[in-house]
Structures are given as C-alpha cells and as structure tokens.
Length: 292
Image (cartoon, rainbow, N blue to C red; front, side, top):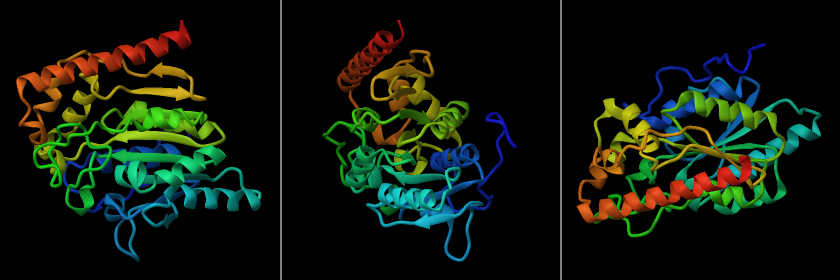
C-alpha cells in the first residue's frame, strides 16, 4: 500500500490538452493523490477534452460524465450508492472548471455542502470558459481580457474558498497546479475527512491568459509569490492556516507577464497592489486569530 508520500499516476500520457496546460498538470497531481480506489465525475469542459472521446480514455480510474450543472449532485449520488452497498473506502471526486462551479453548478454544490455529502470537489480554475472560446465567468479577475470582456472585466473575481468555508464544511482550500506538493497534501488531507471537501485549484492557461506555453510554471508560481492568489486552508469554516508564505513580489510581475492584462495602467496596478496587500493582511489576521 502506498504511503501519502508515494504517488502513482492515474492519467495516461497522450491526452488532448493544450501545450502548457496548467489544468492538465493539476489534474495529474489530483489523480495521483486520490489513489486508484476512486470514482471521478467530470463535466463538459476542458477536462472532458483531456479525458478523450469514447471509447478511449486517459484516466486509469472509472469516470462518470455528468451534465454541466450537476458535478456535485452526481458525485453525491454515487457516494450514497456506494455507502448503500457498504463501500466506505472508495473516494468520489468531482472534477469541474470554474464555469461549472462558480456559475452553472453553484446551486448543486451549495446544496451538497449543506447536506455535507462525503465527496471531494475540485474546481480547476483557469478563470474563464476556456473550452468554448474564452468567455468571462464569475471567476474571471477584474480587468482581465476575455472574448466577452474585450476592454477588461468590470466585476471582481468570486472568492469560492471563502464562500465554501462559509458553508462550515470540514475542509476548504486554495491550491495551485504549480505547487505540486501543496496540492497533493491538500488532497490527502481531504481524503482523511468525512463530509464535503472543497479544493480550488488555480490552473494557468496559456491560450486564455495569453502567455508563452513554456512559462506556465513561472506564471502559476508568480500568482502565489505576489500574494495575488494565497495558498491556505479553512477547517470547519473557521480555522485558517496559510500553507505557503510568499516572497512578496510586486503584483505587476504576475499581471504584466500575461497578455490579458497588458492594457493595465500604472494607476490600476497601484489599486490592485493595495487590494492584494489588504486581502493578505486580512488572511494573516484570520490565521493569527486561530493559531496565536
């Protein structure tokens, strides 16, 4: 039996993700950490492309194709069916994008959280509807270019980790596909707990974020090292813990490395930097309240 520090690939090579896809990287890490005794639920999304067309598959575990809005409810149904058969070992993991999570599937996810269904829900957040042509979602950051926000999105990004933490579920966490050890550890932690566990995984996308394919790991790490996307976890809706303390790089290092933010002015960058610093200070305060 593999220990929590030994991982076996559950994703075959030769999938159809774009070159430099951060979501494919994150998916490989998640499937390593959940283990072979797992059933996955996926939606019509980039994940469906990575899985491949029937009768072929790149997954080494069973997969259930659900409707766009039903990742959480379908996973909950499978989990309860396994429990009715006396199976308490098989892990059920829902794998969805930000569109199927923050927008279309939020009602089902919130309901599953309210019932505390025994599933792991992973949102692979590439911050837009990438599979259908780079349209804005409620997870698209403010000022970001997309095909439906050509002048930059005017609304702020929805904070799903805080929203799910407010449901008082056992575990909610922010992860990043370019921080593999942190991501796999959070999946392993989620496997130890009963109830609904939510992992929000930032997944850089060279196509939609408009940067060279080869720099995906650098882009993902800059998101964290600039404090733009902190890595942390919330237990039972109230105990906060920061899982990586960043280098405190200027936020423009992250934003201006992407074509979708190339229109930002110096004044807008200053405002974003202040917001990032304020958000970090609030997160650090919450951790301090819990762990001092």
